[in-house]
Length: 220
Image (cartoon, rainbow, N blue to C red; front, side, top):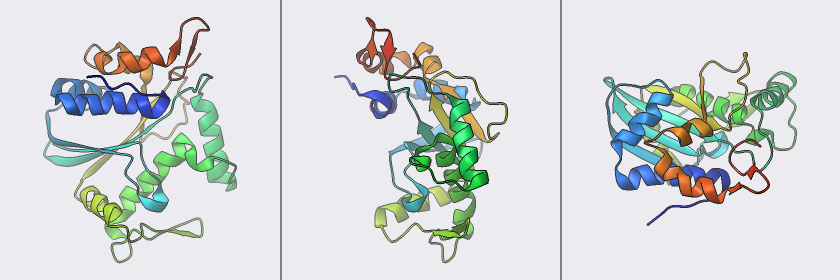
């Protein structure tokens, strides 16, 4: 059996569903090395596209035990969609939202905005009003709401001591003023990793047009 997917969601599913189904601890350890986690981990759980209500739905949440702590990864992924994805451009648009409070079309899909909301969520969740995640941001109130699935994932997140914020993107120049709390990981580097490549290769190939030299995942 193979897991083959389309573009961003397909690549995420192929990689992480594949690792989970194979129970491939070595492959997951190689992914963690990409973000600087080199110690042994256990009790790993993947949560694909779980909603955090008004704080957005991360592409992937991962919880695990390691180094005597409970960790969580907030992962957001972007692909080129057959064009060129530029981190500097993404950061520029994010700064427009942060500094000028400009709500342009699609601002909530911005990589840096998405991860900044997850950071705000994680840091404020334990101290939120009545434990329901009500947080004031720029004069607005963001709430988790009453959905029982959202509440269940929030309880798992509350149990974590340390959060890591991961951006999986096409290879692009990293802005020098990008938020320091974000770890940037490139699709190209994941594909070149021998432990991860088997999970990505079929999705990689079907999302590549060798004749026109285009890819739905990497920059062209």
